[in-house]
Length: 163
Image 1 (cartoon, rainbow, N blue to C red):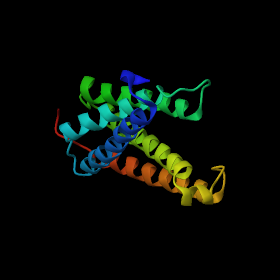
Image 2 (image 1 turned 90 degrees about the vertical axis):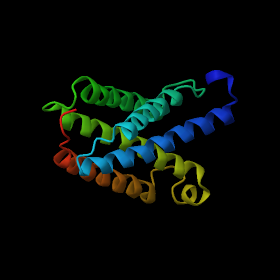
Image 3 (image 1 turned 45 degrees about the vertical axis):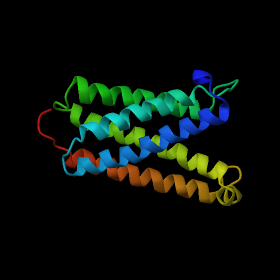
Image 4 (image 1 turned 135 degrees about the vertical axis):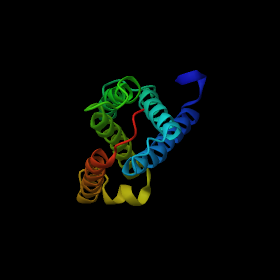
């Protein structure tokens, strides 16, 4: 456990980081449609989303879980997004690489939010107790389609001034 916190406290911190990452990620994604890089919002989005993935590895587990795989993929996407934004300054292809990686990392955070919602909220858990039932599959498919469309549109529209 991180910083000697109890597991319930650590879980609350992890969830808060995740929700901040999702909220700020939506703001950043929205800014992309107007070619506004929103540096402060972006820094918070990237930092909290990285911390969400990193803290996810701190929960006690005895084997590799699907959430760990999602966390690894998210961290790889975030590393590329950070290099594209801060290292390559969105030059040439790095602009759409940044947008794609940032949107994909945000999607993965929302993907896990949907998974957790179906696990923890009784009404949703009843609809899809094994997470293989149609309500869960449809919910995840809708989220995927929305984020794919938003990511593609953002990549087309995001043309900020040289950073």
